[in-house]
Structures are given as structure tokens and as C-alpha cells.
Image 1 (cartoon, rainbow, N blue to C red):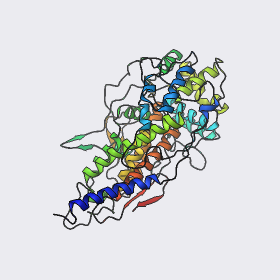
Image 2: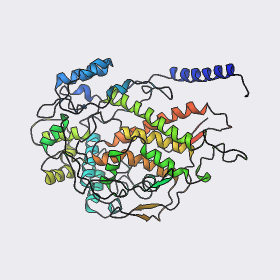
Image 3: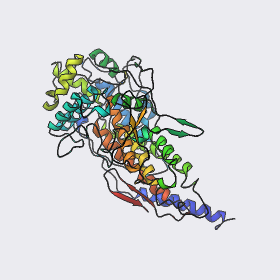
Image 4: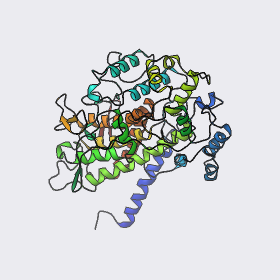
Length: 503
């Protein structure tokens, strides 16, 4: 039973896949360009090298680094097994840089702009921001407007020559501090409603109270500890708070993205959105006005949940290609070691003066006795390069799918925020919060939550979200051609505010 024979069906399926593959084959090739730090420094101080052996300055053993680069150039699995490590911690899946997939664009086909160079004022500004994030981790987001430290942070970031975070009339304010610049990012509480609302999880409901670490639990503030971690050494156990709490400050947000599974944030958001009813669905959904049918396998919950998982993994593939095979950007904790050794006259590195003379670095030294970046995680960053951020790519891809299937203009009912102690949710009564705005904010929270912990730079998150978005758009293009329903296409607002329709 059906409109075409089994033979014709098989032929049509074949041609659909062939046509899609042909489109990607004929795409213009992308010229991937790194920022040059890999070639500008013979001692590789501007490149990621964590887990390899290092000298007393934290500079990588060049013989080990050469073996590492050889493996990345050859993609030979045996070459990866020959990479010498400095301790017990292994590199995080560098061979994923060479994986192929059967949906969306190939992970080598999507480009990224080059990140800031080691010695630039742009790089310095991002490090100053990270230092202030570390110094203000325990301040409730609701206190940013009045707390002395957050006001100082906003003032110093405003004074920097090339800080590229969101501003109001050219200045960073306590309302824009540590936020993203997508539509909706600056509206309402710092934390997205999708990280506060209860999650309907089958036959139960999950309140979003999460384990965090105790106030003041910062790590890698001594040089010996820092150097041990760079060499892949063992590390201390976290000092956990015994009481789960709603996300109220940078420390809590950093811990959420410490232990979340890959697409937890977008998945939770989808489960919350599914309970809002038909009005929350994208107007393009072909079943909204159907007299006899409802969506399920297509345009229903199983469809959207499945697609979130698919696109987030494909986004990680694109991230890993850029991390290992193009940019090799060093992590902020590695840069912090360079700053410390420069300021203690143990080495001489080309670090921009705006960072060296910042109030933030002076405050860190006064508090800890070193110029290292205080970390939220005892193990520091993962053992893969910084740019782009994997969490940001996941968030960008997952959120893009959700914007394609849900009504971005729908106003979220009964918005909330966290109490001062994080033990309960309290009503929020300000400007209305929409699905689109809060999804954008969710992506920023997941991206910049990693910055709160000290493991990523701002540009890792900003460009990671955009890369994830680009991945998701290509996957949606592929799936657009597969449906039987009368469907006008996916319409969504990109992170830059432009509206697109995938027809």
C-alpha cells in the first residue's frame, strides 16, 4: 500500500541522499586560518600543550610537542599512541578531528575567524575579564548592581582598549557584565528560565537544584599545583557544598557546566517547552491547524528530542576539528602561567601592558600570592585546545534546533529567579521573557559558565555558539527535504538577530 512501488521508493531514497551529498561536495572550500601563535613562538608558549611534559616554566618539551604535531598532521592512529605524556592524564580524543558524518556539512567545511593573538590587547582584555570572573564567583547575580567588586569589574573592562563584550553607550555596566550579546541576553535575570524551571521527566519532575562547591573553593593558585596540572598530574578532590541549590552565582553556574552531560541543557529546555502547549510551537508546524492529525515521529516530541542529540554531536565534531587541526589555542590557565612567570621575572613574554597593569591581576596577587588564574575545577581545563568551546558549540546547535521548532515570541509564564541562598525560586516581575530570548540566554549561560570556571575565553564561547548554529542550520537543511507534510520550512532568529527561513 502506498503511492509508489518498493523499487521506486528505494530509488527515490538513493537520489535524495546522492543529491544532498552532491550539494556538500560542490561547496566552496574553506581556507582555515589560525592566528599565527603556533608559528610565532619557537617555544610554543602561545599553543595548547596541557598533559604533555613541560619544563619548570611550564613550557612544553619540544620533542614531545613535535611528536604530538606529527600525529595531528598524519592522522595515523599509531602516531597518536606514540605521543609522550607528562603524567597520568590523557589527551581528550584528538582523533575526533578526523571523523566523518552522514548528516549536515562535513566537520572540515565550516569556518571560524582566527582568535585573538597572544600579545594583543584583545587577548589581554579577555584575560582581565576572566580574572574578574574568578574574583566575583561568589557574588549573587542579583547583587551585581550594588556590589563593589562587580562595579569595579565593569569600570575596568570599560577602560580597556579592545574589550568586545556587550556595552551600553560604549561602557560595560553591571547589567552587561559577563553576559552575551545575543537578542534577549540582557533582559531579565542573568540565568535563563530553562535552568530554573522544573523539568518534566517522564512520570516524575526534576527540580533544577544542583550540587556546587563551597564559597572560596578556588584551585591552582600555587605555582607548584599549576605546574603539576600542566604536566597531567593528579589533583585534589573538590570541596562540595552538601546542599543542592538553584544557580545563583558564577560558582554555581561553573559547576553546572562541570558535570552536565553533553546536551543536557538543550534537552532540559526541550522537555520544559513541550509542556507549554500548542501556542509555544513554531507557527510553521504543519500540525498546528490539522483537523485530523497530531505530530509525533515528525514534528512531535520524539522528533525534536532526537534532533537535539544528533546536532550537538555533529557540532562537537566541527569543534574538535578546529581545536586540534587549525587553532591549537592555549587555555586561560596556561596563559596565567605565562603571566605569573613574566611578572616574577622568571621569563620575558610579550604580554600586553593593559593586563600586566590591571587592577584585576593586582587583586589576584594580593589574595593568593601568585599571578595565576584561580580555577573553579581542581583539575583545571580539559586536555583539548580552547578554541572553540565544545559546550558553546553544543549549546549553539541545540538552541538553534529548538528555535526552529518552537515559537520564539511566546512569553514564558511565571518567570523566576534564585533566592539569595539558592534554596528556592522567587517570582521575577520585570520585562517579559520570551522563548527566543531565554534560549539565547541559555546558550550564553552554558558557554560563559565555562568562563566562570576559568577554562575558556570569551571568544571561545561567542564563536563556538556561532559554529554550533551553523552546524544545526546545515542539518536542518538536510532534514527539510525528507518530510511528506505540507511544510513551509524552518524559520528562526540567528544569534546575530537576523531571521532566516530554511525552505
